[in-house]
Length: 346
Image 1 (cartoon, rainbow, N blue to C red):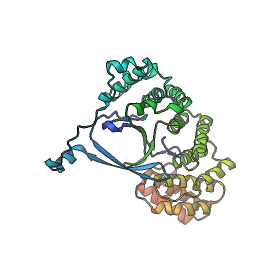
Image 2: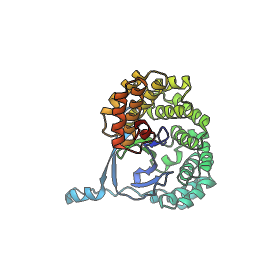
Image 3: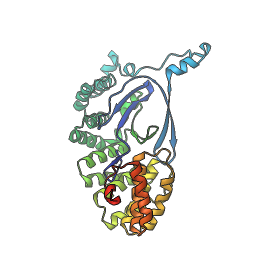
Image 4: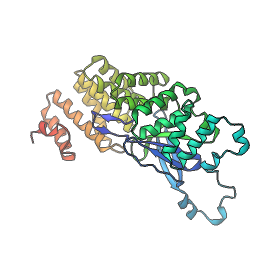
């Protein structure tokens, strides 16, 4: 999911797929993210309960080896590589279905960096949920959005069996939405993950009804999922900003939220915008004040959007002095901010 603010600001430009037990990593991104592979070290992950967000810290294998004394070197053999895990012996092949063998060959090609070869295999057995899931992510990276939608729809239809083969071969597969350099929203190969990817694709195609259907399904699965609440607020205001029912729903989506992370800040920004559109600019401005004060871990673009929205609220309240102060601060930070020069008359 790439979160947008007024169709200008993007906090999450890419997706990453990690096969963690082996140390191998594959990065995917529909906006030109490069493919990266290698066993560089250990990623420590600390979850934020209730948010779906994770702070990550990376330790290099080389650094650990340099710091560790010789006598403390582990005596146990290293874990099997992804390639070794996916090597099927003669008797294993006799007992494995042709479809599963094709899937395994696709996984081997994928880990080896042969994305196109992997996609050929995954296409062939897209009736398997795991194959359809990975085929959808590869197609998404290659900007073949229609194909990605077909594969991910197939994976969603078979969501009860998603992850079956990843688990069988000891692969931990997760798709990470990058929010900041250290902050990620984790998505597993589950129905939730597939639906979130479909939401992004439907938005790119301006298929708002289909995207909303996916998000409402996700809300039923977990009403407190902040990533879903943010995406739903964004989509509703993008599609129907003047609809009173939409404005009310966005305010409800942002209720009970504290400014704890970039996701919370973005959701509160949408709540404030909905309040202003409802004709409640003072309530909107009070919602925005704490957002301006807390800058750590927030993208500059997000803080600029908050400042601009607060200026609009002050303008609606007839407080031209405060509105101009916010607009001038924003101009000093970003003189090319859309619509700002006209408001300042410069």
